[in-house]
Length: 449
Image (cartoon, rainbow, N blue to C red; front, side, top):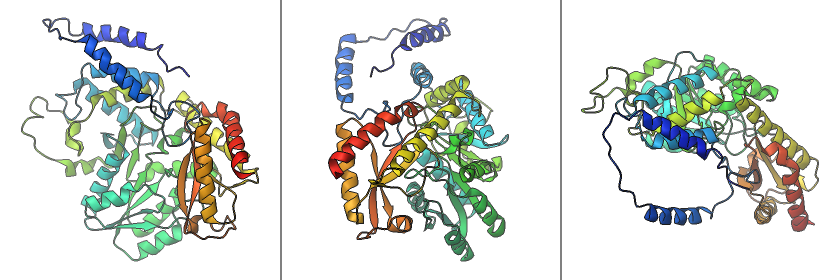
């Protein structure tokens, strides 16, 4: 598969246009050793060949997809300026572009007013959300499901806030009874609802959690780092649709444009429904705010220097692919879900495999049939390795007995089991399902029959 290069001519044309904006400056030539540059770049290219083919549809393992050409070109173009969006003085235009892009993301969730900005990724974005929660509810507990991203427990420790995992039900969603048991004990300041777990793609039951908030009065944070863009998709099941339809009622949201938003790493985003939380960010700087009276992004973020190129790339992508339910971006999300459902259907109909629940987004989990949990784990690893040998790259995920014991009538000789996992987040995956299935069927036959 050839890497896309047709767009490079457009980059050269855009560079000429950018350069025209600085024609009134005296020449300042850079002494560039192109021979040494070429030598090192060829060495880099050679080393980069030792990679999984993240850009190809046969890579269906972790949540990795290439940025769209528009994002890649806009990011590279911005690198000739290298803006810093910590302060307007360091990223004059890119800061404006960031504000516009973040406002569009907020509108996608139904928020016309908000406070928010881009971050280096979902971890930093979640830390800001939890930090604000700690400011509003000092010393109170943060709770999240056992299938929530591990970053929440880790960041709670960093922030010196108590944390508790809430058990999950048989579909990898937060167990509502267990959540209410924790709420009844008191001292819960924040509940994290995961809108698309990274292991199984499950969406926590947000409408029910909102009902519990009305009763117990906690702060509600939606970790939509993975699943947030699915608010645009029209082919979700009833439960997932009902959850995304009410995401605008939470207090804060995290979403990662570098996942389904077609962006290069790292580009995360944190949003707060109530702009007044900006008071917690207040600080004085001796040098970064001296030439502008406008609000700086650095005044509403914990990070200092931040790549303005990320904002430029995101802004350009959203100009080309607006965040609408009728747009190309939404169609890509829907195709990923169709691909997941198609693969799940083939696996579910095959007696060589075990399944637990259909995918809610675009992640499929399954396992090879065996009598014991330990044996299933061994076979999962064998198929994983064999598929990689045929250029089909899957992933492995470990799930607890408590989540799968109702669905699987096996001997639980271990408390956890290793399953196969496929993340079909590329729009092209829909066209490749038959090819993927042929490889999976073939390697399974060799290993199990």
